[in-house]
Amino acid sequence: METATVYAYQISPGNDDLLYFTDALEQCQAAALEQRRDFNENDPDEGELGAMAIYRCVMRMPDQQTLLRVLNDETTLVEACVVERKLVALVTD
Image (tube, rainbow, N blue to C red):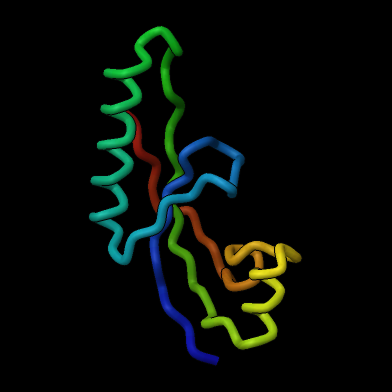
């Protein structure tokens, strides 16, 4: 089974539908910080944005059957391919 390690930050706490992926931890942290700056500048009345979790995700490459399940909306790519997910950092202002 071929795997790849990627990093993802969670845009909304507890919501795996809103993950942003990169191939390096530093890129993920930078992207999360940029998202926080944009949020604070564009939505100052929304209140304070909570900490953003960054995960190291080990993903298996999908086979044909997995791709078909994803394409037919039977599962998400994250559900089908992430075999390990570990919290590695939190990003705050």
